[in-house]
Length: 216
Image 1: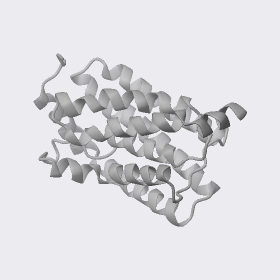
Image 2: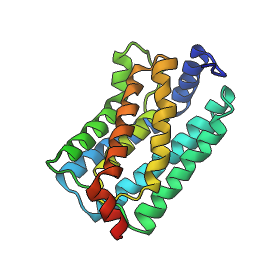
Image 3: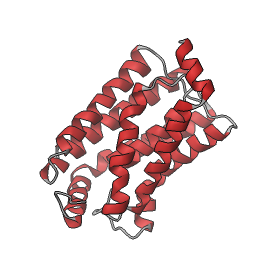
């Protein structure tokens, strides 16, 4: 596979992004951590709306601040990626806030265990990347597409069925695009994207979820 940029150029983009936006990335991480803890101790409608807003901000931020501002400098496809991420943010607001169709909870079930693991992985992503041998700031940290997608899929798995399928299309597509970095760009932590995408597909296809979706 021939990429339009080199491995060093790819990491240089992260270095520029982290230098410019590290306070925003840190703030997004802190708010995401607070939301994850709140989901454990006090789920409810107010938290549902807060998570919807947080996810919309993360997708819009990744689309604009990372893809459109920085990644387009080395990859023309980043224009399409950025627009797709912004579209996902709009979908999240439309379905989760205006239609109020997203309700989150963590229970003792295999699905919710998987959801918790992916949310935790998304929050731990910067540390996992450093443990894999990458050094800050030339590495993906937070507020960028891959941890955003992993954490989002975790939260979608924690959503009560029926899960509106349009919310899953772009995250699943990015698990394939972003997951390829694990192979072609030596970003081994991004292997988790393939796992996340497979889990979300299984959730959408399970009989109980599909039947509930058709009943709505």
